[in-house]
Amino acid sequence: MDPGSAVQRLRAAPRPGNAGEVMNPSQIAQALLASGSDAIVAADRDGIIRHWNQGAERIFGHSAAEAVGKSLDLIIPEQLRARHWDGYRHVMQTGHSRYGEGDLLAVPGLRKDSSRVSLEFTVALIRNDAGETVGVAAILRDVTARFEEMKALRTKLAGRS
Image 1 (cartoon, rainbow, N blue to C red):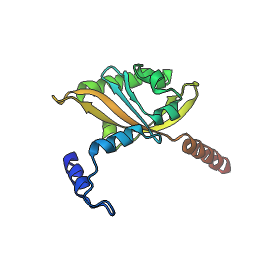
Image 2 (image 1 turned 60 degrees about the vertical axis):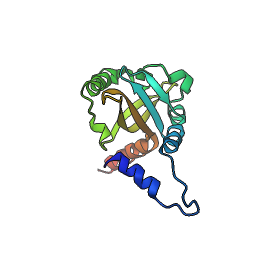
Image 3 (image 1 turned 120 degrees about the vertical axis):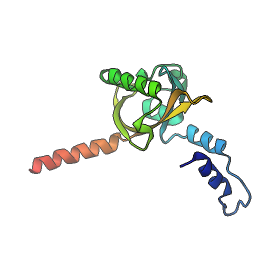
Image 4 (image 1 turned 90 degrees about the vertical axis):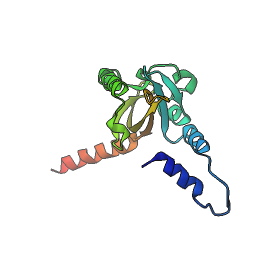
């Protein structure tokens, strides 16, 4: 889908009670970036965190001041870092990620208190005016409770066999 057409439809969509008022795409982006429900984290080509929203603060426990300017290693468990960086470098070199096309990635993350969090996320590549990949933005959701419920259910069902 052409993102421009979605914006045009949004602008053209009638809104009850607000006839003629136009939703500004930058206002929508600001609202999403500031949201506290999901973590939105953006990192540059080198994996340095450049944006850290309230959702990231809530999920990972680090304030924006603590996270911005630091490596993504801040939230990646040590035993997964080599694999992460291999994939990250590949995405930065090729400009393609299968996780930006609707596939969810499920991984453990690392909180400030060193506890684990189960995450699902998608990514969007950030490109400069020349079309070169300059970073990545990720929307991450804490699915720890659901993961633990499924694990308990599997254990319970396995006990019945």
